[in-house]
Image 1 (cartoon, rainbow, N blue to C red):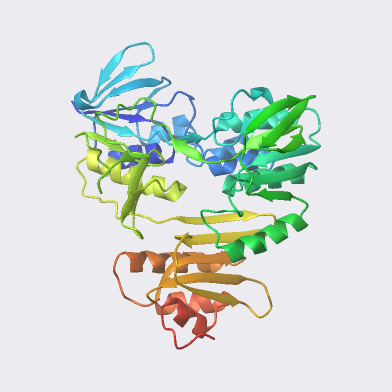
Image 2: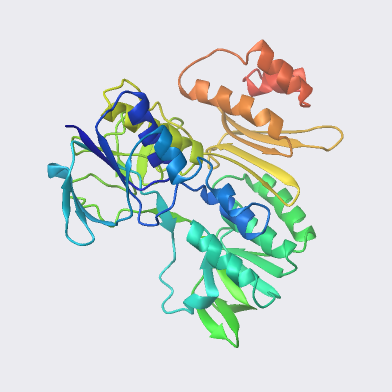
Length: 423
């Protein structure tokens, strides 16, 4: 009888399971998740910690029983210590071995903590998992936080800074990068965001590299070379790294993440990977890249589950894109922020939103949008089609949506690469 294993039960693992069953896989499916929890969305953890979301709200697909009723599986709260890829066998924490006809690796990513030496772990926090959120929430319910240092001006970092500021703490947001959202925001957009964030009372420090964290009274001293910042606690939001400790690179080809083809199969036949632990195709650069996005993990998991079940789905690819809301503003970043080319800027006359773009050979390579979430979907979909080689203009219905959202006909033409019309 066919028997499949899913290692890690996040967004990719859930969609892998769902696709397995929807594509007719009738064999046993074992799901390995040492936390014992259903799939959680990491970007919802700050909402729970800050009191804006109930505990159950972090689990968008429901509880384990609810999921099992729809897509039957065997849940195993066990840690996989080693994958014997050639044998399609898992070695579990206690030494038990389990063999399968197919395996899906969907272990996601874990917070990156730089090599800064010993630090007071009871006063330093990360924000990725449900356990991280619970730990932070317990701290917030304790002694009042007067001042906090958040390291990492990322999407996660700004949400943590917002949460702490809303709770009355003075907050510093620091990063080695020269600006906020260095992987998504163009310099001019970043400058506008930084100006607004500082007006909200958050202190910013860029170009400072974390060198250590030491105890200071009942708080911490966060060292950035010769510069030292004190706080009751520190939160590290520096980034993530794929969770691959059980993988043998001699059996499964690994770069930064696990390398996969368009069916999400690894270099080991019958072993698949999806989500933040793997490198799929970047549509824009046509390279393999870890694209750590919730929707991308879902598509990859669906593709892998279909492949295991004998389906014909293929993962076309994705590209870097981020949509986040914080401190009363929306930021949308689409495409390669490092792209060099012709800059373009549009601001609605009433100042209610702005759009910045970079064109390469007349085509959109990067777009930043501030405070107009409504146009993001149309622009993103148009960029995807262009990256896939399609040359169709924005559809009439989509143009109507853009016009209603504040763009002018001239701006729409400019986004399509028609350069003679810019107003």
